[in-house]
Structure formats: C-alpha cells, structure tokens
Amino acid sequence: MPLERSTQQKIQQFLQEKQLYQLGMLTTEQGHPDTKNLSEWASGDLKQGLQALRQVDVLSLEKLKSYSENIFEMTQKIQDTLNKGHRVYLGGCGATGRLSIVLERIFREVFPDRADQVIGFMAGGDVAFVHAIEGFEDFPDYGARQLQELGFSENDLFLGITEGGETPFVIGATEKAAELSKQSVYFLFCNPENVLKKYVERSRKVLENPNVRPLCLETGPMALAGSTRMQASTVLMIAAGVGLMQGWGGASDLEAFIDGLRISLNEICLDELKRFIELEADCYQNGDKTLYLADEFSASVFTDTTERAPTFSLASFDNQQNPQRVHSLTYVTIPGTHTSEEAWKRLFLRSPRTLEWSEDFQKARSEYMRGFDFSEKARECREHLIPDHQHFVFSIEKTEKGVLFSFRNHQAFFEMPKDIFIRNLLLKMVLNMHSTLVMGRLGRYESHFMTYVSPSNGKLVDRAVRYARSLLEWRGAVVPEYDDVVETLLNFQSEIPVNESVVLKTVEHYLATSMA
Image 1 (spheres, rainbow, N blue to C red):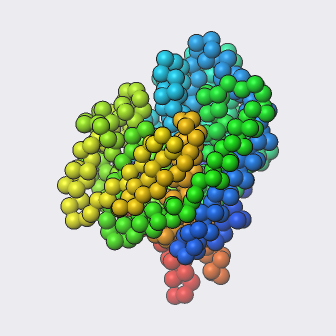
Image 2: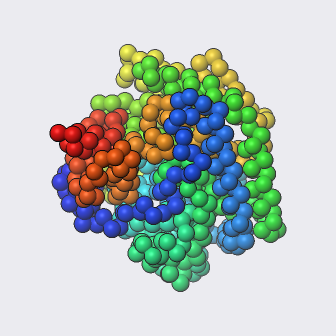
C-alpha cells in the first residue's frame, strides 16, 4: 500500500480504523503529575525543570528494579543464544527502533569479534534512524518483511520492543519471529498488560500468543505526555541492553546495576546544563542554526536530535536530494569522515541497511539515504544551503572520565563511569532533559502536553486530536466530536508550514468559530 495518500484519503482511512489508534487510556500517553508546570519551568526556572525531569527518571529506575527477576530470565536467554553462536535481533519503531540500533552499535564496539551476532532494526530501515518515515509503523506486514529480509532463522532470538505495546510494525515482526523461531520470543512494553488486552485487540493477540513471552516494564507516565523517547525508551534500553552487555549471577546483580546507574545520574551536576539550554534556545530564537559534532556518541546524539522533529513538529534533517521549504534547526557531523558513505559506516560501525522495496518506499531507499551527508562536509553544505544564518557548533566529546560539552565559548564536563553502555544511557537521559527544556523555551508544549506533536501516523493523529480537545475543554469551549476534530486537524496539517502547531491551529479554529 503506498505511503503517500491525499488528505481526504488519510482522513477516511483514519476514521475507518480509529479504534486501532485511540490510546488515551495508556499510561505512556499520560503526563507525569510532577511535571504539570514543565513549560513554566522551561521559561522561568530551569533549575526546577531539570530537577523535576531527573526525578521522573529516578522514579522510573526505581520501578524498573521490581521487574528484575523477569529481566534476568530474558538476560539468560540472550546470553545462551549468543554463547551458542546464534543471533539476537532487536526490532522497534521510532524511539524503540533507534534504541535497537544504538544497542547493536554499542555491542559492535564492545564485542567487535562477535559484532554480527546482534542485529537491531527499525520501521523504515536505517534511513528512519535520522528521518522519520511517515506511516511505516502502522503496518504489521512491514515488520515481518524486514525481519525476514535480515535473515532471521529458527535458532535466533527476537526482542520486539515497543513503548506502548500496541505498535503494529513491532507486533508483526514479533508474530513472524514466533512463527519462525524454535524458542520463545520476547515482547517488551511499558503499559499495563491487562489494559492492553482489554482495549487493544492487536496487543491482546500477540500477548496471548503461546510462543511470545510478554515483558511488561510499566514505570509510570512520561515527563512529557506521550513523549516515550524519554522514560519509556530508557527503561527498555536498560532491559534489553543489560542482557547483551552483561553477564549476571542473578536478579540482585541487575538491581545493583540499576542502583549504580541511579547514583551516577544523581551525581551529574545539572546546573552546568542550564547555560547550554539557554544558549541553544537563544540561537534558534535569533534565527540561527546549530551543528552537533559527535563521534563516539554519534548514535546517541543522532537519536536525540532526530526525535525532536516528530515530537515538536520541527523540520527533519535537510536532504540534499529533497530540498525543504523550512530547514532543520540543527544538523550533525561526524568528525574524521570525508564522505557520506564513510559517515554512515562510522555511525553504525557497519554498512547501512536500506529497503529497496519499490518507488512507493522512496525515502527508505539507498538513493534517498545518500542525500544526507553527515561527514565533515556538513558545515560547508549547511552554510551553502542556508547562507543568511549563523551556524554554531555544539561539540559532545568523550573524555577519560566522562563527557565534555562545548557550545559558543561555554564548556561543561559531566563525570560518568567508563562503561560504554552506561555512558550512553546517562548521555541519553541528559540529552533528553536538555532538548526537552530547549523546546519548552521555544514554546513547543504547554504544561506537559506536546502541542506541537506531528500527526505522521495513526497513533500520533489520535494524540494530536486528544490534545486539541483537552485544550478546548481547559479553555472552557464547547468540545467538538472526535471525528470532526480529526477532519479539521488533518486538513490543517496539509496546509500549514512544518514548524507550526496543527494542534494549536485546530484549537484556534474552534475558539474563533464559537465566538463568531
């Protein structure tokens, strides 16, 4: 089925299938009670905002310890599979797809002699790691197809990773793996299993599959409602990653690992981060751009900068073969690389994997991938593409004892353990806090609701519609019917620039209509 559809086709298809995507009852779709003032803190009290975001992370880590027995059981399966010379596959979409690829990348760095034993993939292939591909996650057949094309066999182990527990792509891959493998496959998610079974038919089907082992890691609402790139993807990355990177004597070792991670997170001096948040937000408010420079941590930096686009309705990274009317606020360059191909290989520590399916999937193909140049040429290309703006370099460097941030003559050192996996986890959480508060200073959310959510797939359409209706209720207006808001919102989406809020545009429309 082609991914490109007219607005009316999108509206009709969504309304026909809306029951598949109405997910407001899920924990991961809700905002944490401790962050209701997040947008205010982002603008006026960064210290409080940082403390609140770190505390939500700490609470999720504490809750994760309660699942240590089940995680340890999965860890044993992972280690047994690897020790027998077989492969472990990790598959997700969006944030969970990126964490799957990041974990493969870390494994390749830590265990270069066993690098090909771990395969991480995501909906849309490797191009989607840096550029969200619209609608791909809505199709279970695509998940099954990608898994098979990567060579999954009967002796391999599969971990299906989905924050919500309802993503069709991951469910499709999980069910295909359960059909092909001699051993049970794992399905990791962050919502209560009983809620998923009650409200989401596709989730109930996979959770009741006798060849699937569900692993619920429900740790509470997100710091920013629905922003599962934060706490949900962090706990999923820990659960899947410890099985790949560590050998455990028992569940108590896992609990000790989480305690150590929590202590390291609490010891990071977040006061040093405040100035970087202010400087980067000021940069964008002045119409300028940033260029992130990263090497050892390039996968984690790409993850954070890429996920800003769909989360906050920003333009995605500029592609030289597909010029955009609105340019991305930021870009990434990998030092020491001189061509696009070299940069992609340095990013993944392997050759990239694209989907050469058909012209209907043009943005997943190698030709489109070549339009992204993250080599040392990136700055020159950006300055040529956007000549009337300044381009400030934000450097994130590995040091002997941690990570060094440098931006506009300001530096800060964040001490972290030497372990590569732990450093990437801590850096992920720090970057999540940083970018979330930068976006808050730019007004990209209200309270802890993502008013700039980009409705690029079924789940995000539902999320945008729910936020619009909630804001109308909060402002005392008459709340229109769900279907009516769907039609209005998707029509506006086809008309407004990428950097404007379709949620706020919809709210303004109904407020104006009610006053007429």
